[in-house]
Amino acid sequence: MTPLILALLTAGLSGTPLPTEVPLSAAPAATAPAATDGASSTQADKAVSRKKGKHKRKRSRSLMVSVKPTRAAKAPPVWDWSAPGAVALNAGLLHGLGYREVTAPVLIAEAKLRPNYGNKTWEFSLPLQLSQRETFAASVDETQGAVSAKVESKIVPRLALSASAELSGTFRPTWPDPYQPRADGSLSSTDRNSYYERSLKAEAVLHPIRRHWIALGYDYTLAAYQQDPAFDAIEAPSHLVPGDHERHQVDLHWRWLQKPFKLEIGAQAFARQSFFYFARDAHTGATHAGAGGAPPNPLQQTRGVEPEASVRWRSPAGRWTLNGSYGYALVEDTYQGYYSSGAHHPSLEATYRVRRRFELGVSAEGWLLTYGSNSYRQGPGHPALTSGDRRFDRKLQLAAEATAPLGHGIVAEMKAKWLLRETNFPAYQPGVFPASRSYDIEWNYQNVLLLAGLEYAW
Image 1 (tube, rainbow, N blue to C red):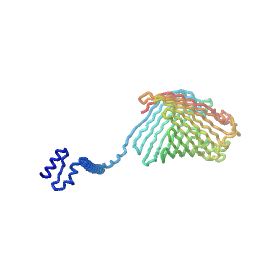
Image 2: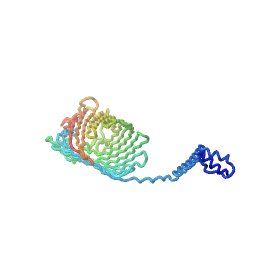
Image 3: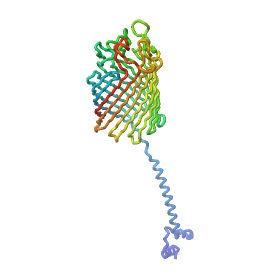
């Protein structure tokens, strides 16, 4: 019996798996154990399978790398436009308008529109504002308007730039003039309180590191007032003087934001040049302007700086917001210091919101101004100050506002404002001070404004 037949019979009787390949050559000792050892055969198959799988995974990984998609090109910035705006109508009561004794019902209409066109890098806007105050039973109506063109850019990372040009005006026709009393005690009317302003502004805001901002701004304003027909620049240049002037202002502020706080520290400096007001002598206030006599003083120039700091706190839920600030303004009258002064300028504001349905805000602001040692002093034709030996001027303003949205962009609003002024400067009395005039002006006063109405915004 041949060896092949013998091997087949032996495997069949013992149940041993048949070898997949039996060599025909004479070497059974080397191949028999592989044919009869099932465990070894299984391990060998697994090893081969692992090698094949390993090669397959490598090929799959290399294939994924080779077919990685290329980065898509950045989409160009999308330009868009909008025109948000608001209109409001309020009615109420006005009591006092500066030193003017006025008590009358008022109706105030306001409109704002801000067309914008831009993208994430550039924005162009054309803000418009218009307001009209009708004062019944008193001739102190007022119309205000402003139009400006503004461009903003964020083309440089961490730097925002803006520039604007604005034309604004205030029209106060036929207001009674306390400086033009008639013989019967009534007051002549004037338009000299009307004016318009042209201004140029520029600002750069740098965001050097997280939570920190540095802002630098410049503002130039040129104001032109309506001249009263009775103004005489030759014979009486110190009477009914137009308030034309120019003003340069630079602002520098550092801001830090770490919720719920915002801190801001900075200063603003200004220089103001009058075009008609003459500078005044120390203590007496004389200008020497007019025909004949000593040469007139130069035109009035003032400059000053106000360092200030403010802090804001907002509750985690956003219902409460508190703002507090303090500044100290130093003003120098560059001629002889008649109008040089220092003023404390504190303010405090609190706002409370109720689930976006109701908002209540209250604020208080003060100006506590004291003039320098060369200011007004008692002398011939100058009565003594009502108190103290240094002229002061103090103002306190309290305000409150409540708003409640009614839906569809309509908001109901109520506003109240109270202003108190106290000074030790002597009141003007006819034939007393100034002795050659018939002025009747009380410098201590209170102003009250109460309003209620609706606003529609879109």
